[in-house]
Image (cartoon, rainbow, N blue to C red):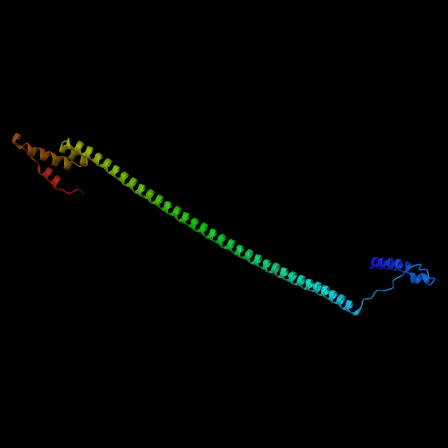
Amino acid sequence: MLSKFTEVESELFEGLSKSKVISSLGIEVMSVSVLGISADPEMMRALEAETRESLQQEADKAIYGRRNFAVEQERKIKESELNTEIAVEEKQKQIVEKKMETDLAQQDNDSRLRSLEMESKLQIEEMNKGLVKMKADNQREEANAKGYELEIMMKTYRDIDWRILNALNTDGGDARNNIALAFRELASNQSKIGNLNISPDLINSLLQKEQ
C-alpha cells in the first residue's frame, strides 16, 4: 500500500508542477503528500463485494479444510479401529491354531502311548508264550528223559532172572523168604527129587508171624 501511495504522490507532484493554473498563481509545488484515498460509493460497494467474496472464499476454504481434517481424522480413527479388530482376530486365530496344534500333539502323544502300551503287552504276551512253550518243552524233555531211564531200567530188569530180582527185593536177614524161595525151586524140580523130609519145626517157623 505504501508503494501505491508513493506512486500516486509522484504522479500528483508531476501534474501539479506542470499545471499552468498553479504557475499563473505564482505557486510552486514543493512536495505532495497523500493522506488518504477513498472510492466513490459504487466503487466502494464493488470493492466491499470483492472483499466479502474473498472473505467468503477464505471462510469456505477454512470450513472445507476443517471438514476434510475431520473426515481424515475420522478415517484414521476407523482405520485404527479396523486395524485393531484385524489384530484381535489375527491373535484369536493364532490362539485357535495353537490350541489345535496342541490338541493334535496331545492326540499324537496319546496314540503313540497306546501303541507303546500295546507293543509292550504283545511283547509280554510273546514272552509268556515263550515261557509256557519252554516249560512245556522242558517238561516233555524231562518226561522223555524219565521214560528213557525207565525203559533202560526195565530192559535191564527184563534180562535178570526173576529169582535174583526176588532176592534183591527181599530183606536178606529174613530166612523165611529164602526158605520159601528154596521150596519154590524144589517144587519146580520135583521130578529130580527122590525123597524130601521137612521137619515140623521148619514148617512152624515158616508159618509163625514175625514178632
